[in-house]
Image (cartoon, rainbow, N blue to C red; front, side):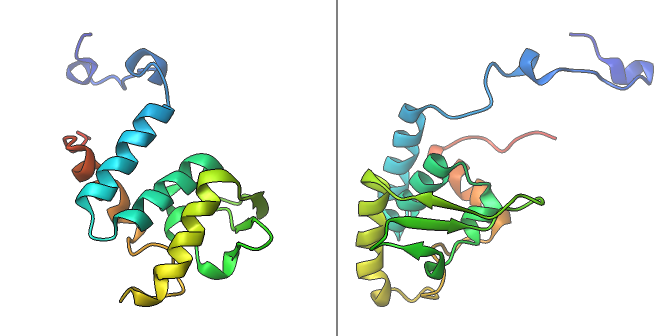
Length: 141
């Protein structure tokens, strides 16, 4: 691929020519969750947040802004406030995600982290922490 910047032209690279896909596979999510459990001080909670984000298609900001008041464990519902002018929605909580949140709920009172929120990461730190867990290099801009 030639250097278009040298010709003062704007590059017109199409994402599909650089990356073959725009999502993580289930195996990659499992690897990420295992790394979070192993390398994080709050491994179960962090792995749960990765699972919730994956299963419900949450943006990083939506994931970081989740609060316990949005979770109805008994009814099996997650109330999601969407970012970027998205419509708020209610998602069913099932399977492993519901079990993980139930366990997290039981242990949250022992955490020094604010009990209202599900995660301790501000949005801008979530991806750097994830890269650390996976031992990935920082992206080049």
